[in-house]
Image (tube, rainbow, N blue to C red; front, side, top):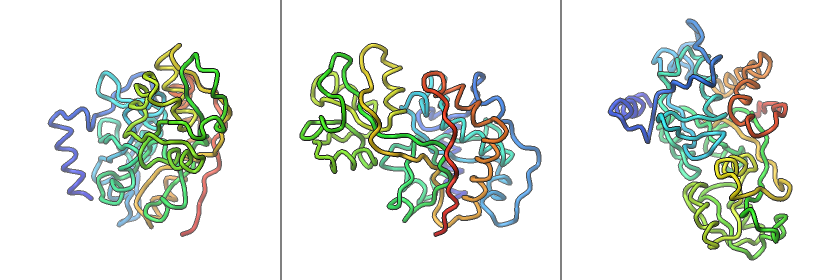
Length: 289
């Protein structure tokens, strides 16, 4: 993993802003300051990362409120702030986080291949994914919903999607849910790429987690709207290498500490909380493999 991490760092230093960037946001994550001289048991992933002084985190680059590449080349959003909190507990500063874009279809491969250390990317925990990677969390409970054009009053629930063309993302849980529902799924690589097919009438709706859709609607004010009630539960977790139980449990500890000391709520308020109401985080799941 170190070799690949160093390779990615070289790419970042060469200026590949589209792939990676150093966080320098001034308006969020102020409390994600590095821990001073943390110590970890030798041989653990925590010790390796802390000693290296850097971490590679996969996140989305096209999802307003959760993971969006800003004009400065620095990703912003709630997932990004959660990543900063974890890095800080390893003694790693924001400047030494290597951000890598992970779309829905490459999250598991990137973890399995060691191209990232963790993934924080509106990443639903499910049993199929847990066969190849592990999850810390959940740290947020979302739900699948529907985005339509602002003047569309024909679609009000998931029942109205049956037999209709609907856009989602390849490899995502929402796409699988739509297929099971009986919708005709148009699969793209990112949710932002679903917007033009929606504008043109190629699809009647976009469907994924409500928080993602809320971000897209807020980014395109007056053009789209979210309709209906969430019809699934999507627990967001932090993906990491399979069987790395020590690392998983440690991240769970960090999440619980952030819940208690206010860093979690501050991270929410400065990002997704500008549009969405705050809700208490779900309890972490310390499952056994």
